[in-house]
Length: 348
Image (spheres, rainbow, N blue to C red):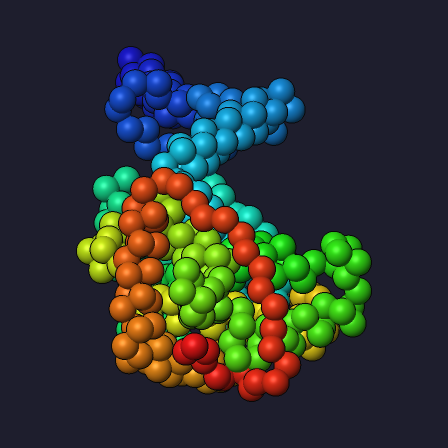
């Protein structure tokens, strides 16, 4: 009897050990013995690992592409024509010639970058655009050539200054060839003839001169091309247009005229040197500041004249009124005067 009890006890012990080797499928944690195979127990519960099928991978890729495309479309739908200019990867100075551009859709590939407007929610995007508009106003009125150190740090505002200058330059490059008859292939133009025409335009700032008025007097700063460039640069319909500010609603500020005149002069100077504008033709930023100061001096001389001053102020008011109303101005051409220096003004 004692021996049978001992045998029964041993069998009970062996049965206990076997139970411990079987994975417990209940929520009760299993405490395995030394012979317990953890990997085998895992495979029984979760199956062996295997690579995803090609069909599954293709479906994931297709889904990701559609989501990315929809996000890019939503971002672009809130942009305007000027916002597309903001995404030109253009880091040249405002006084360079043409250059290679690469369009990058806002928000399409940089939503993870906090320096990009597309990173932020819609209301924040509107706020940032308004901030950029105010900074462009500052550039036009107070600081046309800011140093990077003087601009707001890693917020993209300095890059927006480059974008704004580049926008005006691209408008100038579009208008100048036809307005001043500098395009090769028209009127029998050659490289040499374009150089001569451009040189004549630089003398006595003829590129700023419009047609004589009804009294036969000169019309300084009244060239039709200057008017067109001002309208396209400052009175467009973008969220960053300067026509939303009071300073541009009654008149075109003189400093805006100086900035446009400087960029026009720089491009014409390139034509006078090379007969055409290409990627490699540039003028230093220091020359732009010098040209800006000279144009400011010419404006002051004109503005102080008893006849030309009031006429100039009236003209700028008329241009602003045209800019606030959706209609443009025509193109005009002018001849140069070989007997004068570049920085003279005609007060006849």
